[in-house]
Length: 301
Image 1 (cartoon, one colour):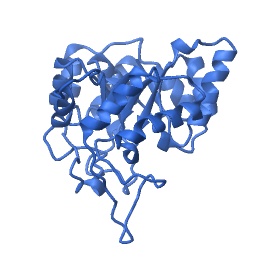
Image 2 (cartoon, one colour):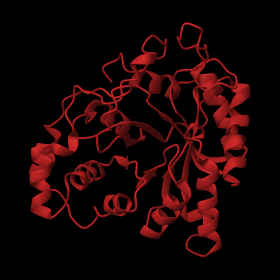
Image 3 (cartoon, one colour):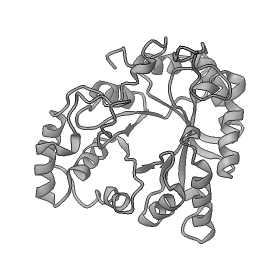
């Protein structure tokens, strides 16, 4: 499983078509990336020209924070389907466990600049998602940025019909998430790792305490051994430990580059050495929402 993470304002149409030609089949999108119309068009065009069938493509959409009230869940998913012009999505996940005030604004704020939160029962939101699966609008359901407590809340919900199949979280050699990964394994939940190559150095939302991942001497050294880049080593590391990786890619060279990780394997000693790089520091802390009652990163994991 391999994913191109689709970003806002990128040329998603050409990127997705190229990615399909390269061999990608699993695409990670979201309403708040504002490019699902391009993504849907690309998928439909590649189906039309015979490159792939619909069942070959695995599309993941996301429920944004302003749509957590149960009555808003299905309309949000239907909005994604209408934009994509697809009959169903393969995976639909709660993007964050934190609810915001419903309305037209995706990031509602008070006049003083503080975000406007909303109380919603995560289990009630989940039940609305289950109804979407029962209606055939989505094949599987998952979550993102959930900690263990929040996962347990869903797994222990009375009358649970469909458990989350995946949890999308930050995961890379500097933040390996061993405890959460083991918990997910024990409960049959696939961990999907975003920022598998680290992140940009944008101080407005990225924690700069952790040094740039791709400059790490160990990753560079291992890469030389296999004639690979540090990025390819970082991706191979997570894939080899069973973590699905979603590198964000919107240049032709990197889309191809990130796919070229299936012709080598890391040794057990190399895997252990990379695991030892863990600094237990997030690049993406989302501190602007740290006062939200369901902020997920206060807990150890």
